[in-house]
Image (tube, rainbow, N blue to C red; front, side):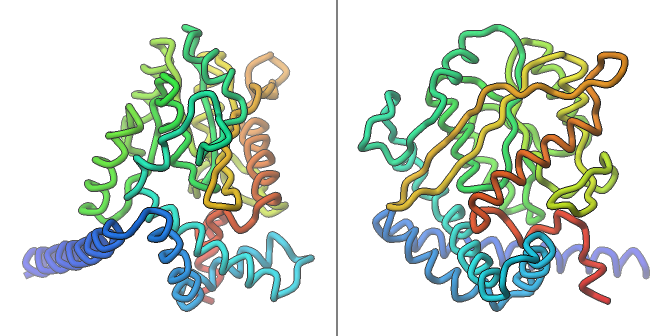
Length: 311
């Protein structure tokens, strides 16, 4: 009987995932019929109306209240509302990625995407030594590996697939078309990334995700645990680490920045300090988020505080 109930639950879950996925695909298919920027703007306007009515909006406002206690309630509401627009644009931009990445490699003024630090793309491309690039869920962060590939830079990116397997499959296929090598965040991922660095190539990591058993650090002066993977890889391979980010600009444009390599903190033995490095990553991401707070995913449970909201 228990086995039968388990199978029924799994079947219902698969059915729900399939229905949600087909609904999303249908919406994206309709958007594809519109001109790129028009479709993206329509999506943003709809999201700004629907997002504040979702359960995740409450989590976003709670996170904003703790991160920005000095801001008024109206200011935090405005940030959260604009966030829904930015994050939903990200989904719509997947459909029109070919048009978005039709950039001038020399960074001409007519490009949708301007790149700051182009010389570092080419230096890394021509350097046989391993390296790590880290970023956060800001702007359209998906453009970073796509544009890197456009400049001939091969970066293997670690990504977390969506929980819905049907959406995950579709998303992975879309990413593989433009992003080069991808490694799902699951068992064996760290080993895979290590083999990439061992071969003298580059790895890309998102460092602002929730992590249950990470290094004890702070983010916006609030306790949080941070994935130690980047620090451990950098310590083992003694490779350079570069911050990079995406910024949305007025007029449906983007600026991608790849900064000079950072100096990682070391302990008394001279080895890279894992906890101090994790804190340094948080500090860098926080500086980005403070500059453009509406472009970060405040509905993400970075501080693992859902249980607090339920009480």
